[in-house]
Image (cartoon, rainbow, N blue to C red; front, side, top):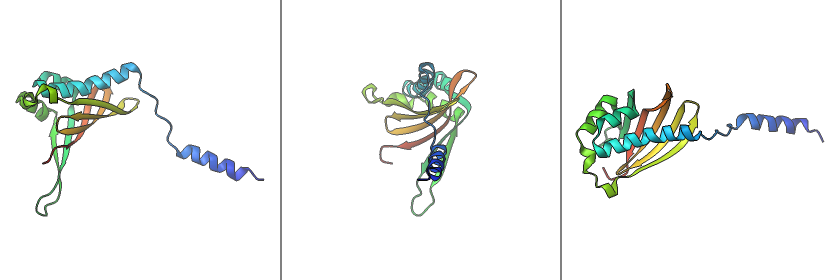
Length: 149
């Protein structure tokens, strides 16, 4: 039996499969989780300074808004300053304490990049978090409402 084709196939398959991601260190996981929690907790507390601490100044936060009456869907965008100003309005304080969801799941970490799912009261945020100068900051958010529009 010629094992060369089988060996070549096994090598090709091994190279094609992604390497298993290393688990983040406890310190990395805590820094990532803290950024996500600062983001969530600041919304509910109406604390713009805490929100600002979680965000990179070049943050992009986006949501897909479905089109109505035949209109095309659109991508709405806000930056860090708009988000911080939104927190300053205190709207998040209207969420009763027993309904303030802030469930953080770290989905992936590779080097200085992490992806996090954050379940809040009425929506889900998918966060991209980057380690810059030793601190984890949220740089991108794609979110979706979980309550009817």
